[in-house]
Length: 123
Image (cartoon, rainbow, N blue to C red; front, side, top):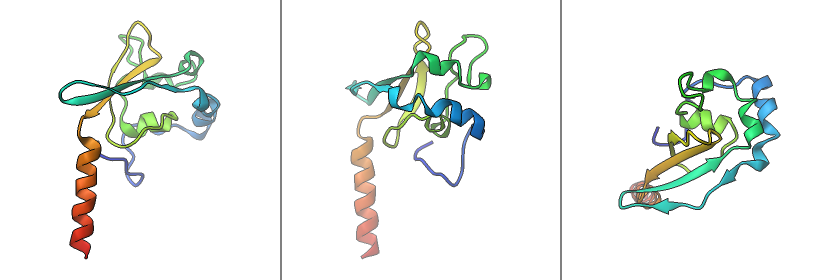
């Protein structure tokens, strides 16, 4: 998903009961600094270990026991907050509470160019 749009939810929404169980963990989600290669920027997000026990089982991969790859709507629904463009691309299997994210290295620059182009068209 290229951007976050609340009008169309992709994946499975949490019920109010499920969301209420997770909200208490939000302040303890840890976000790493960003790191880069030639094409992408990366970061990892560490969920509180206790939080994993409250996440619904259908968010998990039955074979690995880790979270399955989540859509942007799903990880935001868990309480993960990041700027636009991040994709959950892998889990750190030895530590299932660590989720790995990436996005194109120039994502924010491209978004700014698009905004400027839209603004100039409106004038």
